[in-house]
Length: 312
Ligand SMILES: [Zn+2]
Image (cartoon, rainbow, N blue to C red; front, side):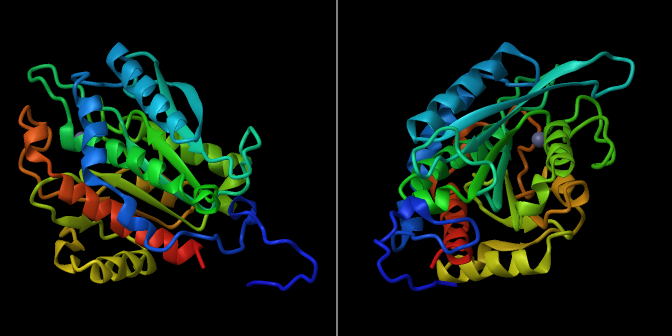
């Protein structure tokens, strides 16, 4: 709702208040470049395997942080100890949370965000093969960095969005239940618990998690637990951009980083995932399986949806 105000000077785009519509450049989604995203994916994959708790994942974090700061985002590491597998000791995990200071005052407000966009940035620890997770861990992370770059062109929109790079999505041995674990979804579960316990969960309208969105043969398979209004909005975007045929539902359930957001933080959340990917969790999950077009498709549709939901 807009209120007229005699004597008010036009607001700068970054001054929009939470809850009011954000001023967004027309067709912002077209600025999302799959090629740019792919460069960010390559910077992650070049590090090699990036399991939780390793120096390689620390380097991945450094590169993510650098990229976000270059785009004008503030980055908050969310660090915690957790024992993913009982009796095998605790490990140190670090989620990265990025917020955009719309009015250039630091630190960015913590109560302005209404939508969560997330991706895991760890790769599965595999002892017998060299697993670099180009699609699984890489594609969504690179895409989120490109999204950050584009959102920075629309500060009022960017300030409504919380970007989260989850550590510990991959199970060390085997996924436990999403709400309790203890193995798998470690970062998203901790993040969701913090949202719930701090009371911040209430400020979020919805969450979107990306996972494995770079396969050249893109077939998005939304989990069965996707809130119907979120899938409808995503499909509307796919229709508008002429790629509706690439988006559908998974035959079965999919447990992923969206699950703790739904179950613990009680935030309606959707996992945009392409689970029809034969190289999943094999040494063949490499850069040559990815296409800039696929990442661009998911990036642009998500931006289309954000602009429609939060803009005017
Ligand atoms: Zn995986």
